[in-house]
Length: 168
Image (tube, rainbow, N blue to C red; front, side):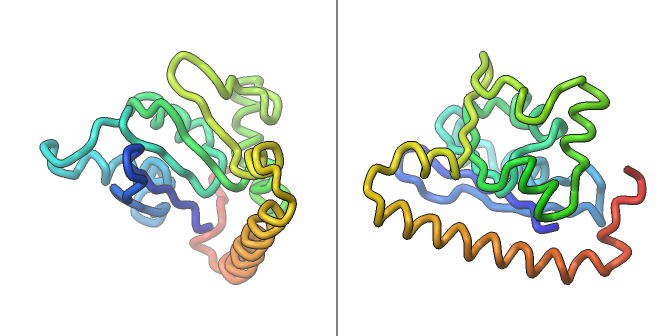
């Protein structure tokens, strides 16, 4: 699947880096982890402090990625597709299954505001923060187009053996 992440500067929302998953190279290179890896490969003198950045993930981070975000020092992250979207629309229940089996954590029950960071669902923000109904509809239509594109890519990708998660 095309899981990706990008990092923006809080001050002007300029792009610092963007990356996507690369599980064929290494199963640990989830979109978020790969983005963080590449972020730390930037020259230290030009790399912004993590506290001065916004971290955005296409999908709600799994337990591996939650840990990577935490250890990297980001104080926030935003995501578009939640764990349930990933399970239901993309037939990938692994994140929820791992959280339940390893951490005994029910779907969505991890602490989304804690000492280390706060996380935000973009879909919830749109639903709860945008008062203008026309603007909310317009943004929802964009999200629907993105969702449809992801579903189309998923239908193509699920036929490839390299896409299968047989180890889970």
